[in-house]
Every structure is written in structure tokens, then in C-alpha cells.
Image (cartoon, rainbow, N blue to C red; front, top):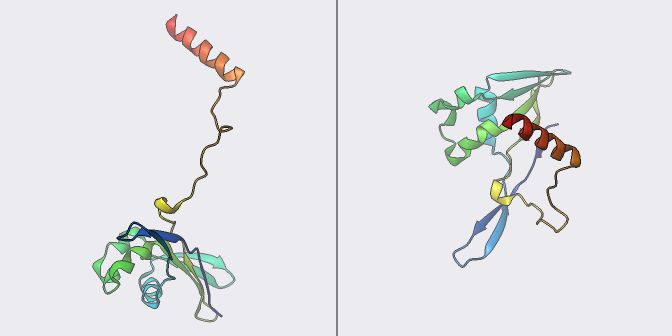
Length: 134
């Protein structure tokens, strides 16, 4: 049985009225999966009769690989498929796209967040500065 595992990063989009909406990244389409199966040139043996199929950056630059995929073609380099050679079927589809940087949430700095040199670091700096002057 095939399984789909994907991180579903959230995208934030601004509307014309200044409101921010959040939408989920869609899973890979059948056309994307078929393109990986057809054009994969990287093959990693996973053991147990399974192999991971991916498309190399050099192969991604070929127009025939991207043909007919439109904007989704950019996702080909982020995908991998684990193929079960015993059953001749897709075991798992991996969508490893990172979330956009604008969506990564970082905690706001607090008063406790500060940078301080240890006494050993201060001794090292003082020693290296005195050696440089002499």
C-alpha cells in the first residue's frame, strides 16, 4: 500500500485589504510523481527491495523533464519516491520542501537573551591582543 508523507508548511499571503491569510502547501500532484518516476537519475538502495528515486539538478535543467508541469516543476528537486521493486509500486512519496523563510516563527528575544564572554574567553582575547602588539 502506498503512503504519502509530507511536511505541510503553511504559506502566508497578504490580501488586498491588508489581512493575512494562511494556506497549506498542497501534496505533490500525480503529474509530479510520474515525472520523478520517469526521469529519476539518482537511485539509492534502501534495502528490503526498496530504492529511493530522485532527480539530479543537472537533469532538472532539461526542458523535457519540466514540460507540462507549469509552476509545479520547481518542486521536482524537493521530491523523492521510495519505490518497492518487489511489488512494483510506490511505497512512499517524500516532499522535502522547506517552509518559506517568511513563515519560520522565531521567538521574540527576552531580557534573559544576551551574549556574554566567559572569563576564560576574556583571558584569551587579552593574551592574543598583547602578543599582537609585541
